[in-house]
Length: 158
Image 1 (cartoon, rainbow, N blue to C red):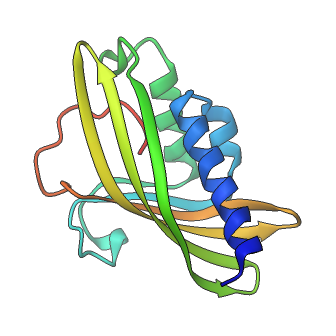
Image 2 (cartoon, rainbow, N blue to C red):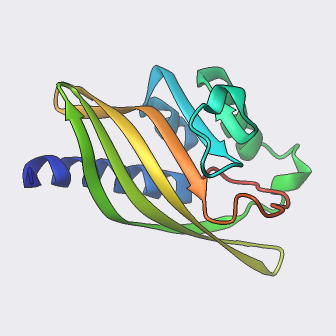
Image 3 (tube, helix red, strand yellow):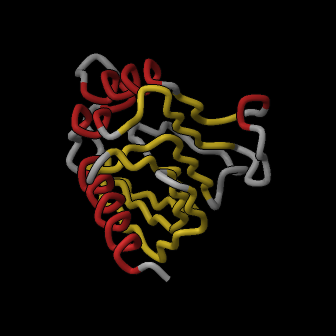
């Protein structure tokens, strides 16, 4: 096990989670490679996300639009803005090929809005690309444990 690599990707993933919890969407968008993909599939067994139903299947423009909507005051679904706290754990490097690393972990997200607290647990896979001493996200797949259940108004990024 390459502990230096694990520590590096863990710090990156924790930074991403902190940015999302503090609605630092511009900084979050800057973590992505230009052709990166953010996916939240409905079918937890789906592998071909381009040809299956998803809650999100975002390229750079859709990520930007999603962040813009969540930042704005014009969207009823995010007023008042939800407060979130997420924990990311059991990170494991599952693949390393040159400058690309695939990391898998668990995420537990708690969201509070309008006197209601919701919890979302997920298996998350990040495909990261090393750029010098930094990382960028090429692909992030969030497999919600309850993805086949009805999800009402989701006003945040997983």
